[in-house]
Image (cartoon, rainbow, N blue to C red; front, side):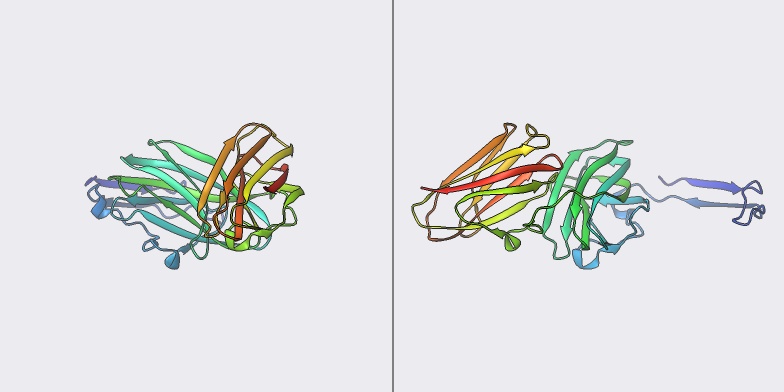
Length: 275
């Protein structure tokens, strides 16, 4: 901070045509290392509406998050179904954790993960499988923290997770509609939410059971029940082959179940019973 740096570009550096460049010497003075002097070249991008368009596969360097500017939104577009993976490099950390999430263009969250970080940490294993369309990548710190974080990141693409006939059902408004009984030949992807809606009468004891039939059967899985207002009412997370959640309906209306896995390419069955 507040230091003059000088550097030399010598004639050993070659242009794209293979000829040496003209030697040059230049320098710069750094500013104070505090949250009042840390806007980066992507600002302002603190809302979904002003998200910065980015190229997949390109590394964006020396971006900042501070307690006064704790949201960075970036926008990318996919032409085909693909998996998008987050890569990040922590360059300078002072007191902040790092939260990263994917969202749709309306700002609805697909998935988020947060963790404490230290200078020199790298990440390359958080991902999500998307259908064609435009999406947001958001990084931020928890609102109760103070300090700053300087980071690089890039998003890369990989082969997508296999889908079932109910996709794209990542949000409650896009849920697949089912009836009481067993739904077969479903597929789950890492951190992907699968929403299903079904009719229940007041007083019905609703039990939703997911059973992994292929893939990493004993990795973590979660089944969550929601009432007619889409409020969470019961949740079970398990590393058994099956997981169940139960709730007694208070209203006659559509209720919902959400399924999530912590592994890719899971084949599973969903059973809903109303007693």
